[in-house]
Image (cartoon, rainbow, N blue to C red):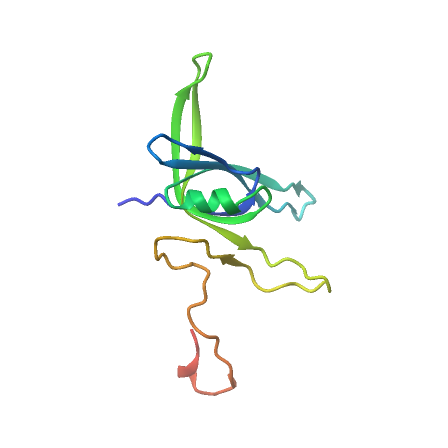
Length: 159
């Protein structure tokens, strides 16, 4: 058994390029940047920020959403498969391209700062228009419990 699944949360690098074919099919492509924060090691070595660029390919039902709403700088959640293809460039050199074939594209709110300087709510994806009924991996499925947790009954522990 094998699994090819990619989940990315990042920022769109440029407006999507949407192409339509004679058959009525459409495909959208856009670059997505994901970043890892830099840090300093205990010995003083500074490890800089690292940004990775991903080529996103969107087909089928998601193309209309991407064309209308996704723009440069938008924060998006992308779920899909990784694929590598080869081609020969104009000078005959074999080139490799790694792409993410998106099954799902959604807006994503990173919980930015409010005007009063306080942090906004927890990060949550914003649901896009979809035909499938895939559950949102970040969606809360139950109501948080409130009440007295000072009980001595060990059977009431949530773990």
